[in-house]
Length: 293
Image 1 (cartoon, rainbow, N blue to C red):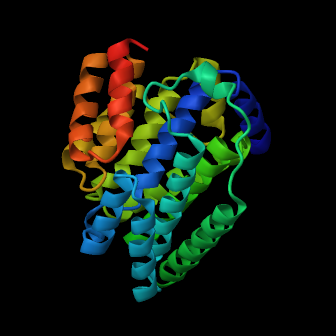
Image 2 (cartoon, one colour):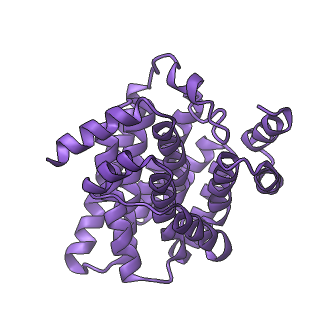
Image 3 (cartoon, one colour):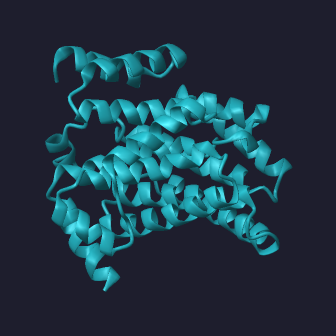
């Protein structure tokens, strides 16, 4: 039953703008979520994700690899490296271009992507190591926040690869549901982990924005949404989150564009551009807004 629901829903998504929006937003969120919350406020991981925000993938990889070697029982080292690998592949393939305004027709008609099999193998290996370490820690303590969050993120990353590179929508929906379940457990273990609200904020906003029949089908598959509640969670992350505060502003900018509130979207993008000057994506999206595209 669940498989049929996911299959039918994914088929409907493939014919609408909403599926493209879901994939795009989840990609951004998962890629940078690996640095979330105070547990990751260590200089190495902090610096690594600042480099990722500025598209310096090689140096970020070196930092994450060193952390993983020095902390083999910590699932976040491998999780961070998997995020960096996926983000670098997205950047190489041009997946993130036009991310904030999402030209749906152009995206839908894009040529078939040619992913690097070596990057895919490394990505799968890091996901496997992260989940193995996380499950080992959960076996000792089912409420281990770090391990729960690692499971949240790795499932999100797998959803991104399936949706944006392989176009496997059914598989992506499955991973998205798993990520949401792990996120709920993370927040149950630590309600003050504000960055973990990013997953709920995204899914609630996007599912709440769908047409009623599609929203009903997704709810049968185990996912529910509320547009205003989603925005509220994103604002909570923007106001009280740590590493994900910039991310929440990225997602809010997307929401503002889709609600035709370009002024607020531009303000957020300008702030991100100033914060991460080596990343040209923010300036590019501002230019698109100014050009009325």
